[in-house]
Image (cartoon, rainbow, N blue to C red; front, side, top):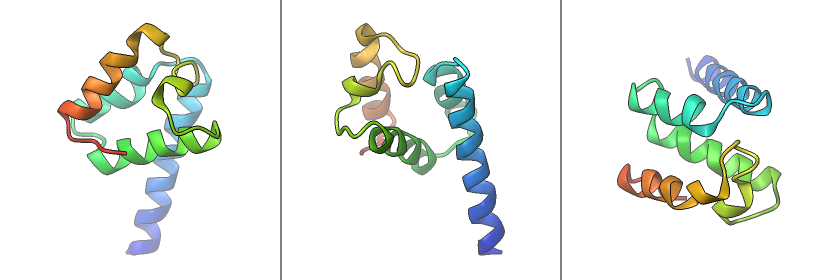
Amino acid sequence: DKLNYNKSREDKLSNIWKQIESGKTFWEVVKEPYLKRDLNREQVREIIKTILKKSNSSKIIDIMDKINLEKKDHKKLLDFLSNHKISL
């Protein structure tokens, strides 16, 4: 049912955010599960948008430290999003 779907989706996203806050990288908690099909495109998009919103920013470069990536990985992250057709 739709209520359970939304609850499990929110739980998954909350769990991902907690892992990032605990020091894991975007690559570990988002990219790897996405490539294993444990996350879908919409979930990745929602994760990024949520982090941008929490950071009061619209630019990926501004959240690199929030997702435990170095600024030098900015292009790599943009390439990942683009290559997988994850638009924001």
